[in-house]
Length: 249
Length: 224
Ligand SMILES: Nc1ncnc2c1ncn2[C@@H]1O[C@H](COP(=O)(O)OP(=O)(O)OP(=O)(O)O)[C@@H](O)[C@H]1O
Ligand SMILES: [Mg+2]
Image 1 (cartoon, rainbow over the protein chains, first blue to last red):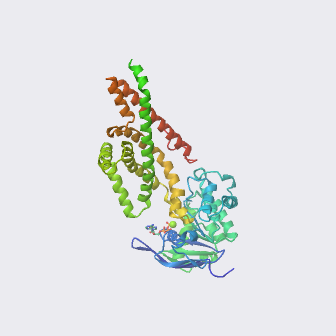
Image 2: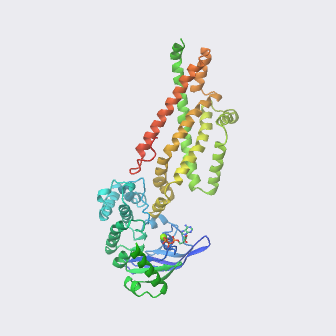
Image 3: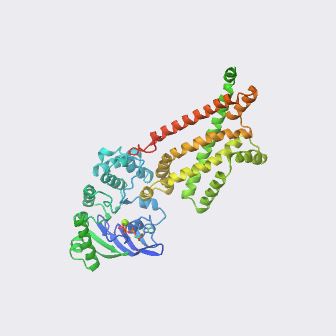
């Protein structure tokens, strides 16, 4: 065990069409830690995740993954070490569940068919989809799709996984099964950075909460303090709004 | 009487049909390979490549087939001698390239951006993403529109007649001049032959489309 953070985000800036969406964001993620990012819509949360693996290259600042600077050179091998789970699942429509989980293992990691199949089965079992290997994405429920996409990320043996609102596209009755899988992952020591307003996950599994607004981190801290005694007025306003929304829906 | 002659001449019609089918296969293959290449260039290429594909498509879709045939056989054929058959393959094949490029480009653009992003996030290169994610989906979606292209190129092979390719239509006109008339009967048989080949080809392509359908989506793209 080393005590350098597994992910170090340093002063990231990103501008879209003249508007600065990220105005210098910095934070660290320790090995095995889960951090949850909350904040109003349009605040740059998704942009931040995409900057980390250079799907949207930042204009300034740096991302260091386990001591290695994430840059265009060798980006594909670096991305393979950073799992990404999308709000819209983004499973490959034309491939069955098993092939969805095998493709990048074979193509990017160069694993044998046998090894890729073995890892895929392990992870599909872990997310409860061992009986859906041959199903195609269009034949799955939203919750099953999201669990398959988590298995696809896990099978790459990533150093951390980024989640972008993994339950927002799900019907309320299906969010539970995905949150359950994520809690188990966090407890098993997976390093996770999760953009989500899912309070259940935040309270049960997050080590820290980051509140972002207007392209900056307003404050961060353990859920117990941040949720009960936020330092900033904006944070408490936002938290109040969140609880209201939850009661209404 | 006419009937006997027709039976005697039928092997010539079949030979003509065979030449026509060879021309069709060659021009569609050329159009497929080049059309797919152009469509990848126009979706993912540098702007100069995109401009090139745009111009190529404009030019070849904007000129009548018959003029292209004459241009290649008599015009370019003067500089680089080529048989009527080869000239027809190139002229009609390049035109088909323009149409097929358009089909493939539309199909590639219809592939979900989210899946492309997911593939890149997993570490697949641009090329691997095109090969493993974009093309398998785009080609499936191209089969329907491609059926039209097949039909229209089958009919276009009859135009190769004007530069002396001895395909079905030219065989028919030989027979008509030998028989001194009976134009209606002979061309009715020829029309029936084109029709049958067209239907068979379409049926085969629809069957392919159903066979390749992604489970969960079988309801789409069925022959109506
Ligand atoms: N590819 C892009 N091109 C142009 N503008 C973009 C792009 N991606 C994001 N933006 C803009 O950047 C801002 C931040 O977007 P982002 O998606 O990161 O916000 P978010 O915090 O994830 O919001 P939400 O909670 O709604 O998902 C928005 O104003 C958005 O319109
Ligand atoms: Mg977002």
